[in-house]
Amino acid sequence: MRLIKALGIGLGGLLGIIIIIAGALHLIGKSRLDEAQDVAIAELNVTQNDLDLQRGQHLATIGNCNYCHGTHFEGKDFINESPIGYVPAPNLTSSGPAAEYNDLDWATAIRHGVAKDGRTIVVMPSNHYAVYGDDDLANLIAYLKKVPPVENSIRLRKIEFPGTVIFGILAYDSWPVNQISHSSIGGRNAPTMDATAEYGKYLVQITLCVACHGENLAGQDPKSDAPKGPNITRGGNLGNWTFEEFALATRAGKTPEGKQLDHEEMPWGQYSIMSELEVRAIWTFIQTTEKIPDNH
Image (spheres, rainbow, N blue to C red):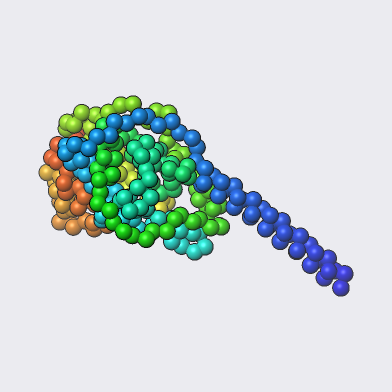
């Protein structure tokens, strides 16, 4: 009986320690998610003339904003898994939280990955949008502020244990806000719109090519949860393509081999509005990359 009692006390004590540790990890993770680092925001001159709005709409489309936030920016569920919790892509129209955003709030969320209330935005590709020139970002914000209101009941983010540990500790360094050199953001406009490698490099970031094809464009890491885009450097199959074949695959999803690319995997519908100059700029940049073998 004494042995059983001792074991019971020991197990009870161990369980108590586990609960205390789990509780502490939960609080640490939650605190990290609720309070992102302070960032300095560059001033923006946001105007809403017709040309600005047209440019902003174009950027929102090729930047794949609709992919996460819905066809009409009405928002949608992004993560909804028990017991991890709920993470929405919020309603960006004036019927959602964005109605309270000023220009700098928009800039902070898009380029820095920090929400108006100071929380870490966990699924916003700000590490790529961080390169936005001030002029392009101002146009994008101008357009988003004019999007017609859409009523849609989107719940607020609520991350539960063990999601707080997963998002706030284990995966914390991988969130865009922690991959950005915040002090270097802003203060310059986008590269000149021309069919140059410089402008192409800019486009592969803001159109999220690198999000699927990898930072070096040699294909997404198989261990990543991101879509597995293939190697699009000269070391991959694309190295055998012509510009015309690349343009057709980019804007219509048709490869030289006759394959129709899945729109959910390759957003050629959004890219269909790209100008020839934009596609050629991306092509020009790709031609400057090394012949890199597939990422493994």
